[in-house]
Structure formats: structure tokens, C-alpha cells
Image (cartoon, rainbow, N blue to C red):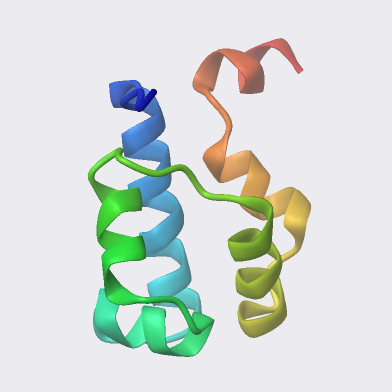
Length: 85
């Protein structure tokens, strides 16, 4: 059963991808997919809410970008979780 992510989760995923693009000084999602060694549709599906950011992608992003897992998860978690913490 496929479930679409909430609008907030989609925004957070987009913010995550945008952050990676800036930190890694990449031009677009296709360049990011090459660096992370995933197919371009994976990034597109994450951007459009059809797929969430998994552990494997998170670890690859950490290794390639130098961002900490904690910092990346902070971008990905819902606003309510950030306020409560």
C-alpha cells in the first residue's frame, strides 16, 4: 500500500535536498543523484512525496556532504517534533 507523505514532510524533504545541493555545490538534482549513486527518479520521488528519505540515502548523503546525521535529521523531522524537543 502506497501512502503519500504529508505536505510538511514533502517540504522537509525538499529542504533536505536543497541543503545538500548548496553544501555540495551541485547544480541540480541529477548531479546530486550521480554523487549519491542513486537513480534520478529516486530524488524526484522524494521531492514529490512518493518516497521518503531512507537510512541508506541518509548515510550516503552524510558521507558525501560531511553534514552530520543529526543535522540532516533535524531538517527532515516535522516542525512539531522540533518544538517539543
